[in-house]
Image 1 (cartoon, helix red, strand yellow):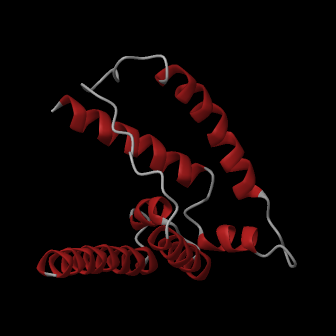
Image 2 (cartoon, helix red, strand yellow):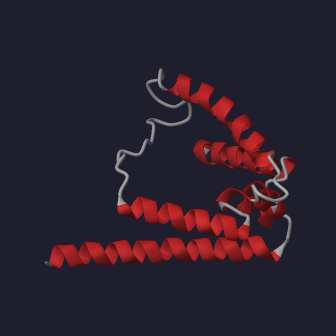
Length: 145
């Protein structure tokens, strides 16, 4: 239960930061991507502002045996840059650029009551489901061969 409360509080702080920095506004994000037009560097400042405390936290966690509120760290073991990762990254980037939302701001934007974040989150969930179905299908096909 404590982990759920910590996750909820962390998500609320993250969402509040996105709202405070206006990153839930797709026009702000799209203006950042418009480098040859009315470029807005606000997203770069938000990223830099996030990198600093994240770097400090990462430095501390490398020296810890386990997290404060869990029994172990969950660090991805796969460090391979493969075709699947590149295609997924390209699809993610294209969707981000077209919609002006990435997952965090889209979820935070749902609290504002606009319809666009709901459509994006629904499409994102559908994409996750389709990826899972495709992966399961491929694994069954490989095992059958």
